[in-house]
Image 1: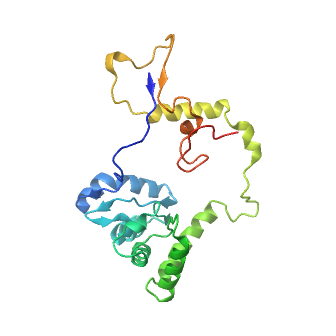
Image 2: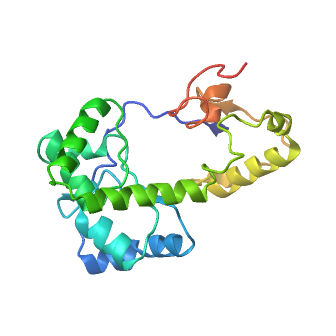
Image 3: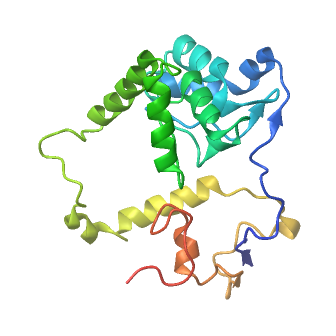
Length: 233
C-alpha cells in the first residue's frame, strides 16, 4: 500500500516560528549550509517567515546584511517570501522601510504592488531609504540577470518547443525515479513490508492523489501551488 497524503485541516502558519537561540548556537547549528551554498555561488536567498529571538528574519539587518552579505560575502540578491514583509511590526510603509534597509533586495508582493511602488518611491525620494541601498539592490539583481543570460542578444522569453520531444523520455523518467528514491522519508516499516517484493502480484495505491496527474505534478508546474485534475491537454 502506497499512501498519498493531503495537507488539510492541519495547524496553519507553522513556518512562522520564533527561534530562540543564541547567535553562537545559530552559527554552529544552522549556518554551515549557507556558507557552503554561498561559496559555491548561489545567486538568490529567500529569508523565511520565521523570527529569531523575536525579530522577523525579513527585517533583520544582522542576518541579511551583516552576516549574509558582509561576513559571508553573498553577492547575489535577497528576495522576500510571499507577502512576508507584511508581517513586520508597524504599518506597511514602515514594513517596506525596515525590510529594504535591513538588506532585502527584491520583495514578493502578491496584491499590494501599486501601494508598494508608491511607498517605496516616496521612501527613496525622501531619503528615508538611502539611494546607496537602492543602488546596491539594483546592482545585485542585474548582476544575477546578466549571469543568467537574460540580456544576451539571442535570449528569448519563448520556450524552446524543440524540447517537447524530450518530455517523458527515458532519461527524464530515470531522473524522476532517482529524485523519488533519494527524497522519500520512511517513518515506519512494520513486518518488513519494504522493500516491495519484485514478484508481488498486486500493489494498492491509495489516497486522493493516487490517480490525479495534477497532484502528482506538484507545485511550480502549471500553477504555483499545483492543481487537481487533468491539468495538461
